[in-house]
Length: 187
Image (cartoon, rainbow, N blue to C red; front, side, top):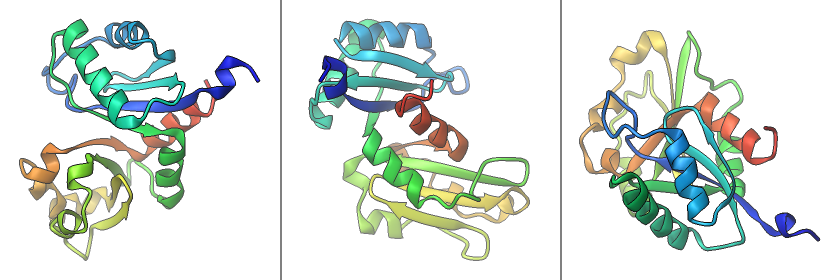
């Protein structure tokens, strides 16, 4: 068994970077930061804070603290991070219906949750319009699907600014599935 075969694949999802000119940080700087932290096979994907890496099995809370501290030291920014193992991300993707995509007709977002808001009470409090909003809760995430023509009727955006919104980071379905492919070695 090689050293690399004992490594676990993870993705770090950074909240709120490179959106509307706020918290601007280059993916190159993040890659360097992760490598300096001793993480291996670091790969960034698009400019919205998706960093795939491997580690020898450090638990996720410890990895989260390490990465958040590293970003603060290296990039001089306080950025919150959600980390998912390849197994966790695969479970989320398996629950997402294949026909739920992000394209010209529909929008599908995966809202990755911090543990403190991944509770039945918080999920039940998400405002929905049952006629247009489709929500699925999977451990660690809420998947939201809507047709683009019905977006104006949705109640889900009303959660912006609330506690749940401040404790999540979202990626569209296509990005989420691509991250899983990259974690599986399809680079």
